[in-house]
Length: 137
Image (cartoon, rainbow, N blue to C red):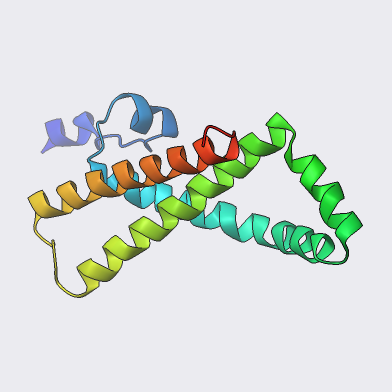
């Protein structure tokens, strides 16, 4: 009994973000879940700004031409590409969640496969938007 008292209790420490990103390999479904939340937060935070820009661009032809000139900037195009990724990823992950709510792809292997498809489809659609935005076609 006395030896147990000397040994003490085990010490548990919190896991930091560095531990999660460097030591552990997350499955695709965890990555999709985290990115779904990040993209939703980005869309939520940017929505007032985007609605303001839409309102101002619809005010007159001159204001539309002004904002069309702003969008020609490469930096603005990169920001719009990031917002496009956020929307497309959030949409495809949302469709995946709707299928899962209807009891499709609930087992581990199917969930990982659909998560990979969400990542691929979101990136391919974002690449297509980027190609169109930068004038490739």
